[in-house]
Amino acid sequence: MPKRATTVYVCSECGEEYLQWQGRCSNCGNWNTIQKFHLSQPHTAEKGAGYAGTEAAAPIPLASVQGQEEQRFPSGFSEVDRVLGGGIVAGSVILLGGDPGIGKSTLLLQLAERIADARHPVLYVSGEESPEQIKLRAVRLGMTAGSISLLAATNISRIEQIIEEGKPRLVVIDSIQTMYDEDFPSTPGSIVQVRESALRLQRIAKRLAIPMVLVGHITKEGTVAGPRTLEHLVDVVLYLEGENKEQLRILRAVKNRFGDSSETGIFAMEEQGMTEVSNPGNFLLQERVQAPGSVLSAVMEGSRPLLIEVQALTTPSLFGYPRRTSSGFDLNRLNLLLAVLQKRAGVNLSNQDVFINIVGGLKIKDPALDAAVCVALASAHKEVALPETLCVIGEIGLAGELRRVSQQERRIKEIKNLGYTTPKPVKSLGQLVGSVLR
Image (cartoon, rainbow, N blue to C red; front, side):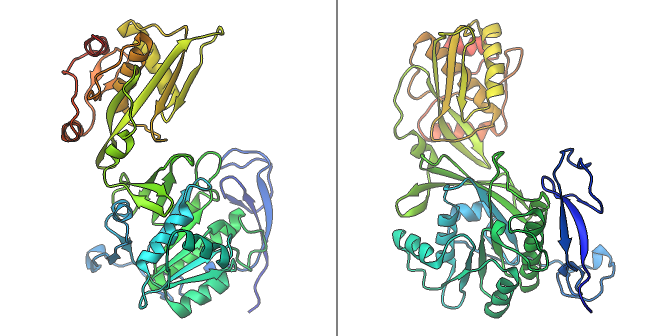
């Protein structure tokens, strides 16, 4: 039966489909984002598209379903296993995003080398780099990579054929935005191509129980480019974060069907590639200098307490409107804390330029950092250096009260284990600032 041509209109922002063109997308509200696509009969209509490849599906009682234990195997990186919930699950689809140059391809190439062996090869599909370029990276990293098969291709049908024939232990797709399906005559990277290519890869992963890692491009907003359905389609969504000029990299899970989505893995980018950081607290504090405006705090990265340094600097403003600059800390939160600091603790910074920096290129959203930011600002303003072993934790309310933070006992235990101390418990920000700046 010949393929039946169809026409759909797709929003380039959210991926919503329409039968006719309209100026405004009713789903996301954006104007002039709906594009016309001429499609062929898609593979979604094929029989046997389900996980088990059955031709017909029927409802069954949940109580009659036999539970199966998840089949996992180690990735070779304990930090990656930590984020994934104990290892890579057979048949899972993992989406990895991150800024350009952050180390996604480096990490995946190292992971492929640690997983691959003579009995279990790994297929590395590259749509952006040639095999020669990947070989150069492998040599630079000191890798042998004898059981890694490289495939420079973007045709999803050809990639499916190679996977069917070789049945590798793991498949890496770098990147999903370069893949295309011949049945959908639109350019690679478009909403339709990304969605349909990911859907076909997901089906073969489930059918053959072969895990796949899809590399995704990042938009300027910091999210994976392409339709939102891409993140719903996969089992795990990971982000590799960090500053390109800093060594530290954080692998963060924002979705995980097989484990805790709050876990993080910590790496350092070295000349030999990604190396795991077993003691991130000491790694971040090894170059610390005692000076006014510097204070330590304990934040939670997943289930792991992490000691970080907060730096603050205040200088008289040369203009009528003082500057507020923050690196690694939410700027709106900083403005709120400045108001509380002035109103409740008597530290007036209305005529001061204020700068906050979280050392190591980290981006912290933990409210337990509030007290440390306030203490660092007061220390910098009054030019008083704090004790080198002081570590401050606590959330600040609008009334200037100090609130208890989550997993406080674990944070305090980690602080004491590393030889640091916390100030005596107080109830208000004014008391805290007064006690540490004596």
